[in-house]
Image (cartoon, rainbow, N blue to C red; front, side, top):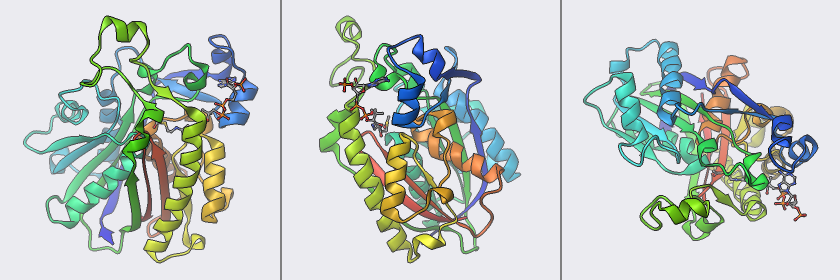
Length: 326
Ligand code: ACO
């Protein structure tokens, strides 16, 4: 068990909402197709001048207020994102600057939709090891800034947002009861941002060819997501030494309602125990789980000592499932 307590959570989504009806005017699609194939009805879109760290700062401030701590008590900041403000400084450095906290280590995690779960494992482990007492873990994305608005196969799927949690050392019987985390880089080509890195630096040609936009072979990704989220959820439950009946709430990554339904079937979790936000947010990658967790807590669906299951799958490929005792 990795012992820690979550003492505060926060979330932020930009004001601007893009509905399926709006998308019908932009590409050859329909509300009916998007709703039945994905479960998405609307998503939030960051302003032109709004970056990934701006959203983390808002989510983190809510979490700090809820935790009733001074921000100086934070020992480490971890930001999970694949859409940082800049390649460097890291998004976490931008966040540190925005929060005005000095003299602590901060770093980013690049694990796409699985990033926040990687962050909980790493943040919790740092507390367990005695390296930190209080860790801020955030997931934030501005995927709509790397979206090709002419590609109907991807542009209907994504939304922007940020979520944060404050982890603290505790003597309580709380934290991660069990988890599995994985990656398979050999499948990376199925979901990637081809240009802008050292393999293919940004140039006039890469922009002309649209290689600075996210590319995805959706139906291939779908097959792996269904298989790996299901398998890892079952294994995390086993490792935690519990049964699926012990789970109060399942908060999966939300890329597609059909992936979630299939994961629930494989893991033996009824949809009634599964928290769904995809209709209102779309896929916010690393932000989906922390924002959904915050919303579920605000709806009082989880109380202290309840067991929550998280499961995610994303680019890399990366995937993970965690059993948390809140
Ligand atoms: N509107 C209307 N028709 C569409 C749209 C659209 N927006 N998009 C695709 N279609 C069409 C296709 O052109 C195709 O038409 P055809 O049969 O005439 O060729 C048809 O619909 C079926 O296309 P598929 O791609 O096979 O559709 P599928 O049922 O697989 O749904 C989707 C596509 C929603 C992308 C699905 O594959 C999916 O959810 N994939 C997984 C996404 C995911 O989990 N990503 C990982 C996380 S993201 C991250 O890490 C950043």
